Image (cartoon, rainbow, N blue to C red; front, side, top):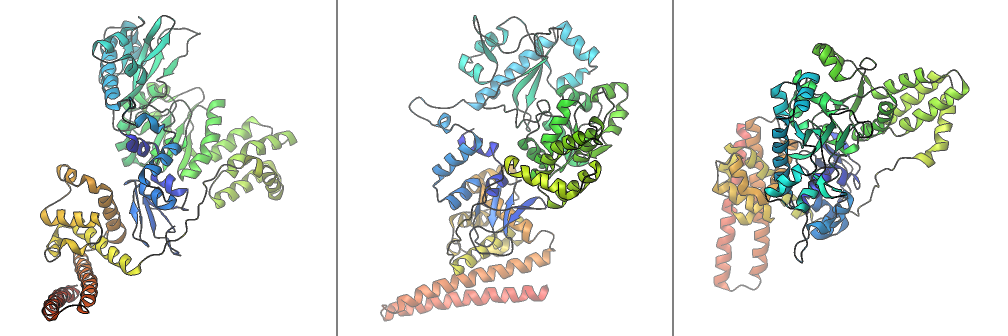
Length: 593
């Protein structure tokens, strides 16, 4: 993966654009006012699924890099450097030449796959690990294989020696997070532990969680792979590769505290369960999950750490615009306990969830003496910062009123307390940068819009490809439009199969924009309506093209001799005939409509 792909993997386009444009959710997409024109009705679209943006008012569009180039006036290199800084990426590691060059990610993936298989073999031979997994945890052999469970030998350098024997270097082993500096030199990062591979959303191994199998009060029960170019605990969601389809179907996701709880839940048939590294729930976590569902349910312990995690998560969920709720399971129990007792108890528990802020208020009502002055102060001290960070004004007002009623004070008194602490504790908000609207050639813009809309119809509807026959490449203004037109004309049966899409790789962003255009303008229309619209756009495209051509020809008349004038008149006649022909077709389509 190069620097561009690394930036795309770390940043979401809605966040990048959101620093310049006030965006609001519009179904699966985001919408806002164009920074490139003085529009009053939002027509600027951002698609998180496709990772592209399109401005209907100016006709501009592209990926996050093209957006930064437009608004900041940068070239591609400058935009890449700006976004790399934003993503916390050292761009130098990707520079080539002069001995530079970052880690080879494919090599690291290969090494981690190899290590996983090594640990699996060791697991099959280790009695303590087998007893822990199959007897104590009650996992089946199928489950252990599905989650690729393994064991790391406690010999010091077993994995390092094995990896080096397979041709991997000390540096690569370190970059994968598999080695550590010991007093006698480089040794294994993980020793004598149950190995739980961490996989990304596509199922590729990116690291490990390792659980201690012996009782050692001086050693941590769990250790994770350190931060690497592949593993970032603030972004990784354990089990998402196996849970995402069920999340889509059930339309909610459950976040458990431990990786082994996730495995137990999946084995019990409840597969919309995932986990983060402990209770450290971050904005990237919630954003990644929001692409599958807006209903996120936490199954954290109701202890001090669980309550603190909930407090931190509520404002994040408000910013990401997802519904965050708490699954209240019996005290002292975790998902694994319920599943061992009866899997149905866990199935029932995840359906009984309470909105996170309501749950938090009830929890502190029980923990504090809210009838005393001190209890009222502590209750408001804890909850006001959470309420203040809510993005929705109506929701914020509701909870201000609820808190006031709960502790028996006036809403005005609570508001004054909020105002006093606002400046000291106000959360950082996205900066809104006003971009100076640019002068737009209205004729050129209209021409471009016509071409883009026509192409999106013939791209997504094969039955309309016959309308390409009388068109020529020079009728399209921009290079991506010309290339797509030429490809579709040469491949009239194109249906978007993987092998076909490879041929359009250099047009990937433009094709995504065309797909977004179709979804926004034409999704759901009947075929006869689409045929009429495509015919109308074809006629409009040719009309605009002929107008431009005739204007150019009229300028040539002034200096042309008699023979040249005759040739020019013949050309004008040909354009008029073409125009009359397509107008006739548009009229017939109107009648059929």
